Length: 346
Figure (tube, rainbow, N blue to C red):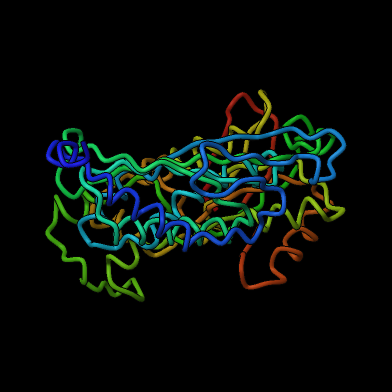
C-alpha cells in the first residue's frame, strides 16, 4: 500500500523519519505537567499541578504569513519556527496568561526531512524562550495542494491565568501611561509589502547591504519575532499593577493599541518618543510609503505595549530595563476622547 501511496505523492516512511527526528529534538524542559509523549494520539496536561485556585485557560492560534516565502526562497528555515511560536504566545500573554503548551501544523508538497527538522528546531527554540512545552503536531504531505518546495505553518498555544489576575482593559483610565517594549525588527507582519518593496518593485539581492543596516538585507528581514512571555511573567509576579497590554501585530500601532482601551478612551502616542528601527525608515524611503500607512501596517519598533498607572510607570520601565533582554520606554498616555488613537507630532 505504501508504494502506491508513494506514487500518489505521499511517502509514509519519510513521515516516520520526521517523527523520529522530532522526538530527538524535542526535550520538554517544562514538561512536569505532561502525561504523554510526542507521537501519541493526544497529550494530557495536569492543571492541578499549576497550583492555581481558579485557573482560566487562554488559547490562541496564528501563522507566519508570507514571511514563509522569504524563508523558502532564501533557504533559511531555522528561525521561522520561532516566529510561529511568537505570533501565538505574544497574543495570549496580553491577558496575563502563562504559556503552557504548543502544537504545530506543517503542510508541505513533499516531505523534506532536513527542512522540517530545521523548522522544528526553531519551534523548540521558541518554546524554550516562552517556557512552554511542545506537546505535538501534524505534518501533512499534500503534493496536489502546494507548489513544489512550498510549505505552510500554523501554531496553537494554550496558557493559564488565575481568574482574579486576568488582565483586561477595565482598569484603564485617563492619565494612564503607555510604555513601549522594543521589537526585534519587522517581526512577522506586512511581508507582502516588504517583498514588493525590495524584490518586486526593485531587484535587491538577499545579500545586499544598506548603509542603514548593520547586516545583509535577508538577515534583517529574517530576524525572528521577539517573544515577550518572560517579561509578562515577571511583571505578573511583581507587585506592579498592569492595567492592559497589547501585542503590536498585524495592523501596527494604529489597530492594536486601541484593542487594549475601553470605549471613550484614546491613546495619545508621541511620535518623537518612538525609537523606530532603521529598517522601517528604509522601507518608507525606498517604497515611497505614506507615514500613516507605515503605522497602520508595521510595528515601527514597538513590539509590545503596557498601559499602567501614572505613579508606577517609572518603576515599570526600571524593572524591565534591568536586563538586556528587553528595552522599554514611555511613548504616550491615555486621554478621554471618541478617537481611539492619535499620533502626535512632537
